[in-house]
Length: 468
Image 1 (cartoon, one colour):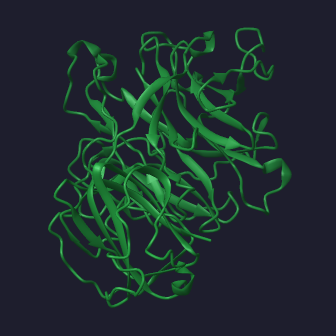
Image 2 (cartoon, rainbow, N blue to C red):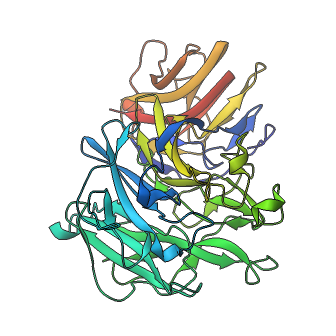
């Protein structure tokens, strides 16, 4: 969003009902003056999972986190062998942890998988396959013994010829078995964390995998990229197709960590690890490259917006993050307080203390529309909504403010809902309510095409929605 953008598009109204809307891309901006969109970076909190067990000697990473009832659950890869020890990727194991708050995690003694002669561990899967990626299946037609599903990478242990993705099932998320002996998708390369889920918005299964795209790069004539396939039954899949990212230049994108952002239906977020092969800050490390984490968003799960080319997470002051694949973002976002979401990432890959950390980010706080002290405003494309009240996620300074005007589809202010009728709103709220003089209900406008005009000063606006 350019601070000087000024256009008027002839758009058909977008039906949003009571769904929350984020400003992660330019979709909602029709005309704008004196505002810009700002990417906000998460804050590193504490180590969530240490590599402190014998079967984790080579590190812990490639995790998936979900909230499951009143419990938080995590599945993660653990490597028995360190960087300089004899071993193979295909010696990797899958472990399980759980938490009451998404902050403090325990590794239960499950007694399922033998390691060095003992089953006293939190391991849930050994073979076949690695890079376990699980989800709880929200498909109402899924049988009870497939309430949890996962994919693993099945390949040839001594080569890079990865055969494909194997499908797993479970009734409880702990005890797993193969759905079938053959891969569900066999179109390599897959040598990363391949990420499946049930997409209730599209009523189908989706998987995001490793791929190759573009030309002129240093990896098999192209760039490490991301592909997507869909399925009605988790067994029969469409061909993998590359995601798109507009006209932004190709970069090596390794993991994808794509999620549906549940607080804003129809919003897909992706946090790929960006690999830069031609930078090597430590020549003694033995492998070239550095990495960081970027932010992408989509409204359909295939066409992604890359407005923000800068990093979402940087390697930071920690020198052990400054090498190839030094940091990854893991899969999943947990609401760990009303004001904060938790994301998880891997640090120190191939170091003795490779671990998973927790990051904190303001709820809905990925991107904001920002105006400085001088102030600015923007107007949305037409929309139809349902409900009686308008809700904002916003933050102002002591002198800042947010005001909202409701217009008809042609841009004329609606009586009772003009900018002059809206008192300057200031403060910091995740779910603040907008008011107009006389407290008129928005119900009279529900279902009719309207535009929203926002006037903001020294403030950030993260999201809006309508509610009953």
